Length: 230
Image (cartoon, rainbow, N blue to C red):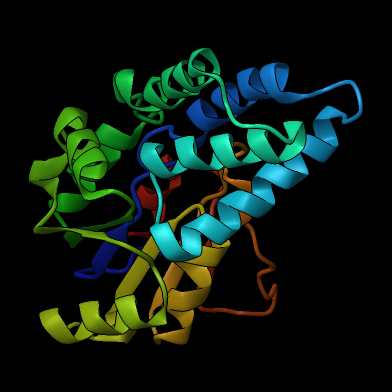
């Protein structure tokens, strides 16, 4: 059953276009560089995850923070400072995240165009302002959205502010994304409905448990299925 004239708020990374897979490729190359004989890849990855989580809380997200996290992880595991050559290699890995063209998830462009004819669309994404805006611009999707919001974090306060600023009715508003931690749970706490569209490459630190009994969350297998419900 379709819901008419709703407000649909879309996540960007790994909902509209692939993003975390770039980080995973860079991390794989980083582990090739960082793993000393005394530490395995799994242990090194766990340490990087810990450092990334700590830096995200204070520094935010994006390539610059990722580069810093890799450097801290390397120096911790090797118990010495980076050499200039090693620092340059980490800079290359961080740059690889933002250098490639935006890869839209299949069906996104056509589905958004159809939804924009029937509903009010907004974009809400977290991260470095410059990096996120560059992806929005390169995606060719910006014209579908009535407003674009790039925020430092997507938490309960962010969703409440979005509702207040735009005079949204939570019961007629849906947050659509792939991240339980950033897209679904805080939106539900703010009283919004939510659509969960999982992505196999979702950042491990964005994962969280969803309540299977929560009827305010619509679970879809693919982005294109949105047209069947909205």
